[in-house]
Length: 264
Image (cartoon, rainbow, N blue to C red; front, side):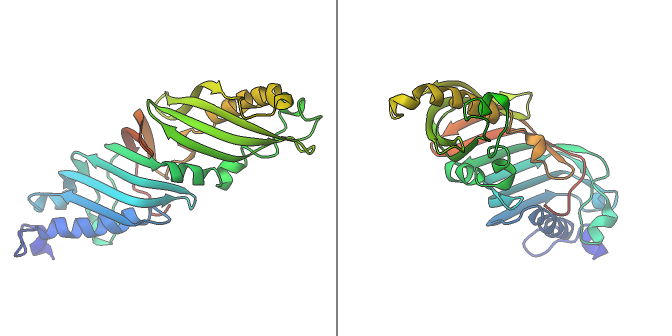
């Protein structure tokens, strides 16, 4: 093994040190996800003798069909670092540990279907059901209000169509429909702004309350998607840009990696 770590190559020209790193890194990264269709890792370290000092040239990861925390589907995710300092002893024990924090360029692609699925996750539902803010209970005679059946459709120019229902817990269900602009704030929060509330399909008797409830739902959503709530242990995502493209929502930015977590 140590012959491989100091420069031995297989017939294909792949350095044994890199092969071992790729195997260990792939196993480590796969454990971050509840589910994964594919995870590909490429670690460059040449010559392999650098690995003995814990130095690698670059680290690339790309994955598809990923599920984070059992409920959050990610269509594609990739990140890439420059030189990284790792603990050589951890590699020999089948793990990957950093000697010091690093940053990686990152891209995350969500599908429209995956986003809609996320609205059924417990972490999201608990922020939409049985709400008792005075601004809502004033509309329901004091009863808790729930927003249900939330569905989005991605639109060009960073917009989305959102439909939902508001259950006033008094026998009245109010339909909601609007077009929103989505953006990024403080590099970690997805914002929902400039609602164009659509009342054409809402019964006339419910239009005023539908308008009020729509504004309330936008405010809830605008304060909901903070990436710090979804971070893997030791990894923080920071966003520079988002864009809608067909049925995909594409985020680009970087990951601050303090340590490699060993499970999702």
